[in-house]
Image (tube, rainbow, N blue to C red; front, top):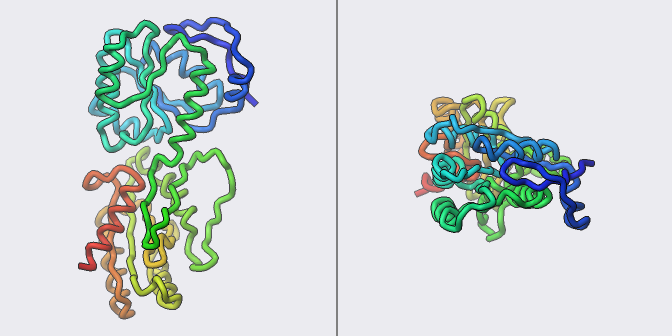
Length: 321
């Protein structure tokens, strides 16, 4: 188990201080999550403390242009982003605003790292631009770790919920690849024989990370078969047709009683459209009344997992009219 450092963060200087035992015990276990630090001078001590507590820490310096910042940040897939706002404001203030507005990063928690003597005017401006949280240097590292631990935990469903299904219940949230629970994920669904929905979401998070990091293509196909909702044989037929045309690297799961989804790594728009057309043809041959929709990462403003699945499903639903 880790041990929280007994320091006071004050403009980059660390001073030994005592703290309340109860608060310290809250942050003495190793951190599980990904934290991105943006900035230079103020960020150094923060980065060291987070690494010391076993967080995966990325860093973007002031040489990163604002235009490149959202893509660079999204590539790291952070659970939390700290942005240093120096007394001169400058880059830090603009970086907060840029990250808060860009669809690739706007769902990630933002925390402005500010000097101890920062005026209320600066804080109000930062909040009005980005809606960020704040960490004021001069507080103990225990408070830094407590804040980090809480925000990382809260951001775990950062890929969002898929919304309500036809019965009005919530669909399971997407579980990040660095989920701290470490509990086993069932790969197969015993009823349909397809991959489990949980495994689909687990792989989706990892494939988005890989696609972002290495600039690879990624697509999702959704199949809507209304008759499958209350007919087991129809459901199995639709699932079989979909599974049979997919590659070994693809992941197919049942999203709802009447909806199936397939994750297609390395599939660009052309490959996706080919699968889409072939699937529609086979469904028609089987006289199975169904509609198909698809979507690709980074096309038409699609940057996150929930948007990717939503867009494919929306395309399938719109095809019914």
